[in-house]
Length: 478
Image 1 (tube, rainbow, N blue to C red):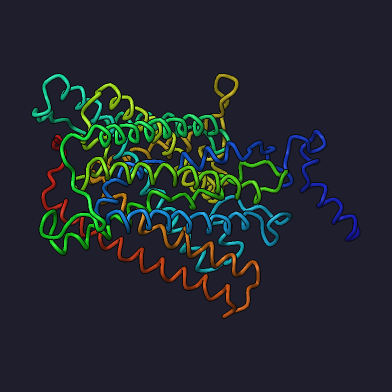
Image 2 (cartoon, rainbow, N blue to C red; image 1 turned 60 degrees about the vertical axis):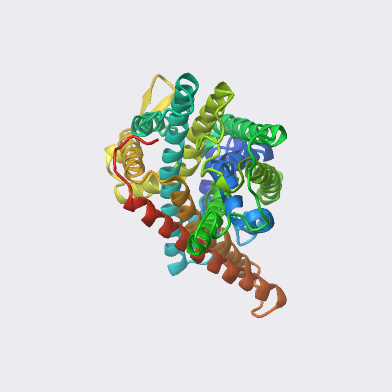
């Protein structure tokens, strides 16, 4: 066989037509035809972004005040959107429209940057994803507990302690996730993301409405200021500094979704170009979430002042109407059921792909069994995903600290995944000259964000250390 014949045969094997139906049911990479649109991508983004982060924003604004709080919110919003547009152009490489597809964030880094940066990216990404799933387990259980405590307060009065343990609800959440984790991949999650996005709008709107009602009715006087909590009145000088750092981490966590952006983009159909659709979806997602964040954060601060609770729907700044509080917290729990899956699917996909390469002859790892005529059951997938959910639930039980945990995750992941890698890949892919104007300001942005991440991580670690001093494991909380 001559070279031309070999190339023609090779091309025939690799093209979608090799899979039948003239390629109509397959994309250019031979995979099932993608059907995602800007609507489903926006839903995935809103599901990933508007999560437990929104609940801590009133507290975060309270630490920084009316000036710095909204400024920091808008700054993180702009940075997240800007770097997401850079990342969207990296889904295909070397050309953003016609290049080879990359299916995961780490694959993009390997394709464009390679080497040690690929290894560092994988480490940062998967640590972040694991941390988020642990954080969502904590938050979902807190919301479930809040339903029970809200009913208790309504029945026995606001002075009752209403002690309730988080742990049974963490176990319940884990059981639900074990079942949902058997969904094979991201492409099967659109319905769950849309339901979760609706839930996020519901509880954010309820929190917003309750804050407006509390401000409008007046009632007890609340203290607010341009600079937030006051030294000597609310906190000491050192507490003010540490809390401000931690609040920055909470806001960073509230915007974390870059680590699943490529996986979301991989659900989009190829026409129009994926990068253009993803930029549109990112703009819609970030604008929507920023609107909710600013309203929830500022109105929550106006309602509670410097005494704003760490979680404004479960910290019981609101007691009535109890049924509405219950509904909001149920919405939070349902949303986090979906958001957990959005963040854990990349972990599942990575481990399963690696395992299939490592043990390519193993029937346990590679063989799917058809169940009920439609569902493909893989024994390794069942065992591995169940084990993962159990481990994250156990860790959540050991460290159930809402604000500090979210702040630490946000600060550790924000710089490498949201800023550093997208900027470095954009510079490399566009062959940008060193020390040019654009190269210089992109590098300055990266270094500034690194400093912000370091100080916010320090604040969260200090908060965790303080919590651990007075923490008693497996004891009911009040």
